[in-house]
Image (cartoon, rainbow, N blue to C red; front, side, top):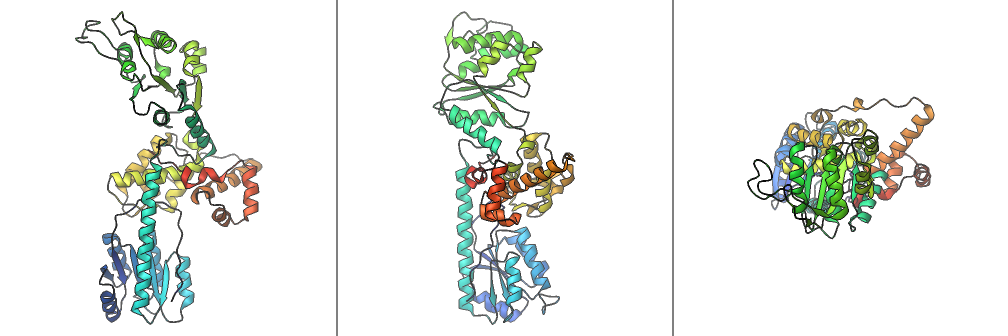
Length: 477
């Protein structure tokens, strides 16, 4: 009996629903009839050539494919069979393909295994042995599907939305874990679209206030004449239109966490009132005289440079020091090369499920585009591109055309040869670690170097395999 072989893949796609469909690709009517009878406990779908096989694959998405290597128009050769195998695995990389070869044709069987086939079987067919192979393939496929389901659940963590695959983002996550249990006022600095609100929510979910409210307000989105009332509330008759007493966002957040997004856009006059609240932890509603004590954790964020705003008299220096007891700098997406593909895969999984479009991953040109594009809109741009690609994709793989990004869209690099060599070497190691989830042996094989050499290079560039492992590939939002 043939040795059991499993093709390993690093691309993590969405988990498909459990099914027991078996696709048999065979052009011999007599053998096809025999195989149908042999596998009557499965839902059998049949095809006679490559075109019909791919059509049935798209339609039924079988877990296992049993395929003859000799297919028309040249059944005496294996070219058409190997092409069918390649097309199958490109469309459905999780499908287990067992190839059936002629007696003694082990060379072509091994070629098929090298191209990703799950196993092979040599003619003449012994139905009992072949059934054992197919049963094993279904069992392995179901175990892998369950593993992906469990991995998806594990990824739903308090740090949901943050990909910690780079050293910079790992440092951010470590800061979150240290700061969250305290009530220290925290300032989040980062470009628009880098995920500042996600970090604020993570601070809340990991804090003792997790069961209380998380209240967010965007200081740049509310007109200046309404912002004070939105934050502090107002009494009935405080101004025209104030027909009843209204609690502000600060009061509503009592016991929980208040997130002040884009605090750099807060008017100077209101900054003074905010400073008093942060110092005394009491508020007065607009038009009111009573002081109201509020117990709330405050997290602020801005995409501007507070120190530059202070110099330009746009932001109070005393308020800056009050809101920045701890500051977290969130790196832009272009500086998170190691995490790009992991976050892209997670977003693809999210929107594939949400939009009910079962996709298996990214094509090679899409991977190259994701890794080379500068992403000026940061994570928000990536999320929008992938959501659109899920809608537009025709096949099972998202292409660069679906994303609307090409591999040539990256920014020009330095021409200094030493920097070029170091940057390329460091990037290759980080990308290889990302693709192999921090597995040192697989990364060394992919790079064509020995494990000791890889360890030396990782030490040289300050890299750690831990940051690329599956447990640190935290789910994205």
